[in-house]
Length: 425
Image 1 (cartoon, rainbow, N blue to C red):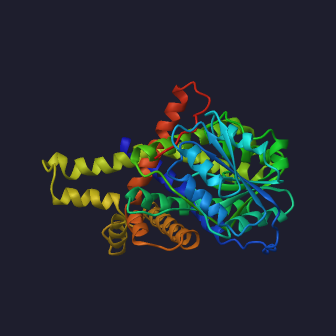
Image 2: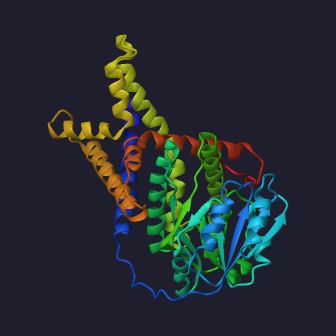
Image 3: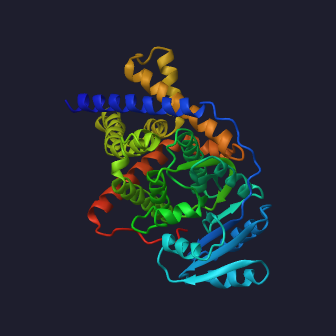
């Protein structure tokens, strides 16, 4: 009975995933509109909220100063740092035109709002203090504002690859999420900003500025921008490089904050779901985000059951607790080689080609196609690190799912309305 339920749940998951991934590929190759002219260079105010960023802040400032965008002012808000962030920026400001504001530790939203009061220009560019840019990034970032009603623009974010294995998986993941933002931008469903993003100052003031009542202030402000009737776009050629967490604890804290923040914002703006005024967000991107939460609570138990059911059935109950075949069994489960072996056995008739097998192959081909297209389009180049991350990406996704589940339980248990912005290392 339990096995029948598990199989039916697995079949349902495969059907839904097939629809989702097919839509991703369809939208990915959907023809873009005619390109706009690249001659829009209004004066901009660059805001860098920084909390304990002594390791990164100088690199960020140097990349901004080196930008070929001439009409810019740079404002750094030290959000109550207890390291040398303030001293580093103060020393830098003696050589370059950088305005430094000292504030209490109140969080990123209030830090940005504080800087906006000092900003002189009509366009605001918010840059995370662990993010660097290319010389032409700012020019490319501003171009979508030429389109009517565009109030916010996201960049193409890439991870600084190192020998740290954590960055390999994050780089692959960022390429996938950037592709997701790209297809959402095509249909008016983009609702998440990047480590560097641009806004129309008048629109931000119109909707009440940034708010710190969620752990995802960028997601929240995008939803409020959409509610006000404005558009959000992505600039694929505006490339930024983010220094991701280098430790498991830093990665875990970041992902918990992201998942909690996403859950908070969806709950806060639940009235946008299936709302005809917000087609892209209401009928596609937000429902997809909600599905991933539902998916997590079903998929993890189902897959865990399948993995351990096979182990106990073929090994443990036969007195084989650890052997070369056991290692091979788990290796195939947790790497892409398992899918290669499964496909081969389907072709030679070892496994029957039924509806579940067909859907498994379709989902795998769709995901693989989407991943490699994302790497080609949204990363500098495909490296051996990306290939290793791809081979072992399945267990990484299981960990992401587990974090998502933990975040939901934490949010349901905790009475805190928001998570204060902290530095993840």
